[in-house]
Image (cartoon, rainbow, N blue to C red; front, top):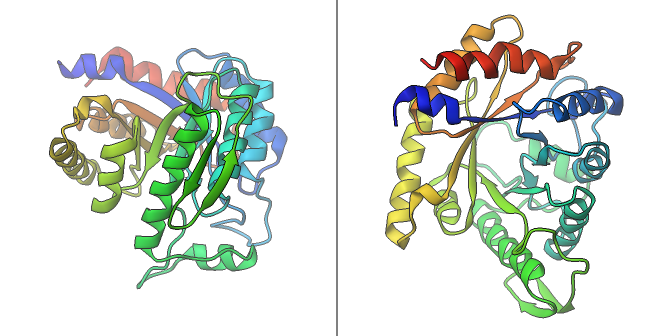
Length: 303
């Protein structure tokens, strides 16, 4: 496919990180984006305390906020980028997600990731967050095992009328989930992560793979991670084209040309879906700015 076709085929989302922001600030961006067909989806995050700025600042809980925004929009696909698997019991999460899917009339994309884990080196914001809310912080290996079990439970909640489950971490008896999701088989599953073991789980289960892009990670690194994912797909006999490649980037209001360059580089690296994260505070007509300064120029001019 020529590079211009890559750019024309790109899908775009908007992300509003609910940190140090009021509900009305987030709502106005989502309602505006809902009226702009150039934007396909909208996203929140899943933290309970600020990761930057004053530690006592406002943070709205992700799934509760997503339900409210689902009720105020009609077109956008929506989700959390990504849900922390450690914050909610798996079957409870399945019930929450199904409720949001029903409210949105089937627009939910189930974004999911390992969540916080114990790390040997460097700062780890999950330590304070999990301690504040009384949550256990698992090892990376346990976190991955818990993620796999949650995926199994979600799939069963979305496809079976009643079931029991005996897993490493969760035991369920007579689990039912009515009403079921709108889409047969349940919402599309987006998994976030980049480690080799995580990419194996993504190859096995994901419909969409999401990874942080610039300024956190460069496109060469993303291209290398893509090759690892492709190798995992080959090892299990899955067509890698079945998995949509997605990346999120933080836009620069003062330098949209650099943001456009990042998007073009991601497209050249095989990314088909770009989530444009808005820095706070949000300017007036922020969603329209994304369309006019990023989405339309990239699609019209390609490289």
